[in-house]
Length: 318
Ligand code: UDP
Ligand code: MG
Image (cartoon, rainbow, N blue to C red; front, side, top):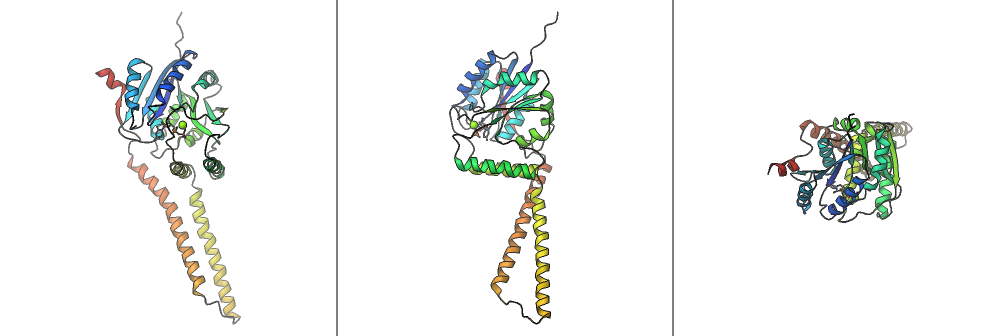
């Protein structure tokens, strides 16, 4: 009787300067692997780290055949690292997980159970709390999710992490979206599929420090708005329209006053304010237009999302 082959689960781990956290991560994932009724491959993507991350990955890959790695030619960002990992994954199921243990590997068995029998295509996670995070950051994050849910067709879930386990079919759908400006949280929602949500309390990173400054996060959230909504364009055309109406009303008032023999106010200050306001609004709207245009420009260049400098295949060849 043929023995049914075990499923293969690929775990994609973006790593940028994670040399301190990697040993903890490996220890934890090795423990969890024992309780999983599936084979595992762990694909660590070194996103152009400046510390010893690559060195540690080489050693891990030499000692454990389940560990694979890709090393980028420079820092391409977490989005690119996730895409590279998903492209390299061979598994029937693929998980994305941070290297700092903020995405607890101990949830994997529960996630695998949920997708295994086909009831769900993916199991995603969200943080219930934002304990340990600066209050300004939490406030901005909440505001961002509120605004996004209003202006985008793609339903983003508040506190959603990139940590999720997906069936091959969903991974292939994500890989078919080859856009250069990537916002994976939005792409997960956009491709659809049945998703189960697991919640957990926020966990502080095990070692090292966060790679996201406040400004980097703010830029990232604008990336999401431009990628998944065209509402800013609507706002700019609406404000232009509203100003036109306002100016028509203004002209009518001036004419009526002139007809009634009442002279119009002769202040240059008010005129200057109006000119400045309209000029500013025009620049603002051109700016919004430029944002969309620059994205179109980058997409038409068809540049690769990432460039690999080294992988575990290179060790095997030596
Ligand atoms: N990361 C990456 N490239 C980057 C920034 C971050 O691959 O340019 C990885 C990082 O190594 C970690 C994950 O993305 O595994 C999440 O980063 P971090 O923990 O710094 O973010 P936070 O959890 O603070 O939001
Ligand atoms: Mg983290």
